[in-house]
Amino acid sequence: MYEVKLHVKCMNTLGEGILWNEEEQSLYWSDIDEKKLYRWNSGAGETEVKPLPDKLASFAFRKEGGFLFAFASSFAYGSWDSDELQWIESIHPEGSPVRLNDGRCDRQGRFIVGDFDPDNLKRGNTYRVDTDGTVSTLFEGISCANSTCFSPEGNTMYFTDTPEGVITSYNYNTEKGIPQNPRTFVSLAEQPGNPDGSIVDAEGCLWNAQWGGSRIVRYTPEGNIDRVIEMPVKNITCMCFGGKELSTLYVTTARAGLSEKELETLPLAGCVFSIHTDVHGLNESRFGT
Image (cartoon, rainbow, N blue to C red; front, side, top):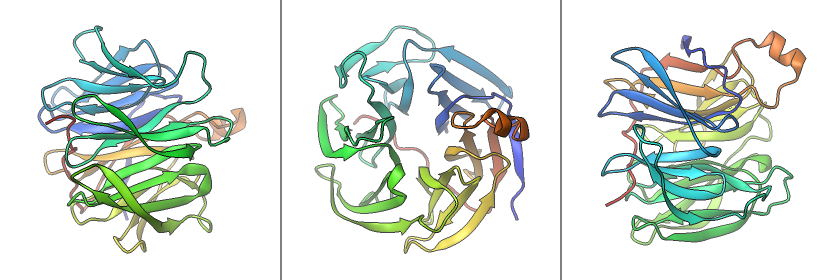
């Protein structure tokens, strides 16, 4: 049994995209709806908040320092210490209901990110941002991209369109950055939630946050349930491994999608939690060459 601890009482509307920076020994995550980037430093034990000009859907650390930001409609380079942004490319026109969502770097340093369509009309796409900033469309017809992550060797990519309730695995062409041969990795049809963010640990197992399911599930590389962690909140969004041994699981959650009554009974919704595990994670791949 794992002990789930309250780590940061941040009450995020939509906490997401949490990443561990091994050089700083710090956590970063976003509150998408509130246009904020958070940083928690393990040395000082303090949490800082950086206001942003737009909704930050997901992000990656750059090899040369700073971030690649996937805002609602555009990509940009930026840093924690400056409000200045270098805009790369606009994806969606101003006022579009569709925005960027979950994203993660492949093992070669390219950023894979998909869209969110609030009306569930499959107007979204999934994109690849190459290390030179060039953006290409990988596949179309997405409502809510999530679970993007890669096997330790990088030759398997995982992805879900959350409303479909299925995590798909692909053969991933590491030379060209192209997912191929999609197949069902796991179906959540008989589970309590829908698949949200995922990560892969050092043993090649996939950990998935179940939105609406109040739990995190670890799957073996064959797609079998290995273990389940029950959470004290309903909407689990994303997670990462961190700490000096990469054995602490840090988890973001959301208040979004909950009724007033549910918020009364789930007072820690939107907070970040920590769980010490007997498993080791992998350092996050960084964007760039």
